[in-house]
Image (cartoon, rainbow, N blue to C red):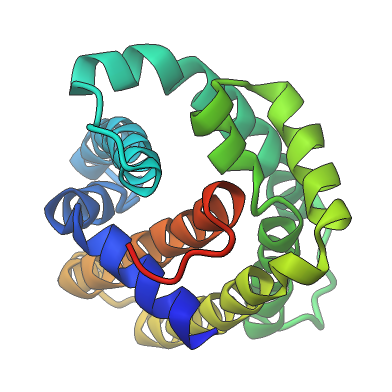
Length: 221
């Protein structure tokens, strides 16, 4: 577990500036002019994510990374399709009628718990998307691969669980800061910081899973 965290951190840190930019860009505030800014930011974050994922795979394989234009051209459609499908469980949950007795904290815990389960089951999906340039087939391949190699994947699953705990903790802290009638814009710096942390941790999971696929016995990169 310790080696997994150290190795993943080293790999992600090689693209730290892009990771920070992706986190800063993915902030979402759908109100007034911030709606347009948020939409543009999500597009920028999407494109940066493709570049970072592609560079992580190249680094682990010991290859030179492809140019940015090539990475985006080769992966944008596959990444988008898989991302939409993986988001369906959370989207469906958000549409369910909630009991009035259910607190917002409980809703956050349930939603983040669902996200954690999805991330655990699909840890190999995105790596397959960027390694084999597959789209929807990668979902089935990734899930099957996990269950075929469950024992060898436990350290990655443990990392997902640890990171999910951090995400839930930060989400709860951020929620408590947003009081009724408060100025959301004053919390933008904190929201940006939280987004950067979320983004960094997501790339760590990707790096750990990719290492397990490409070099399962390696200790350092």
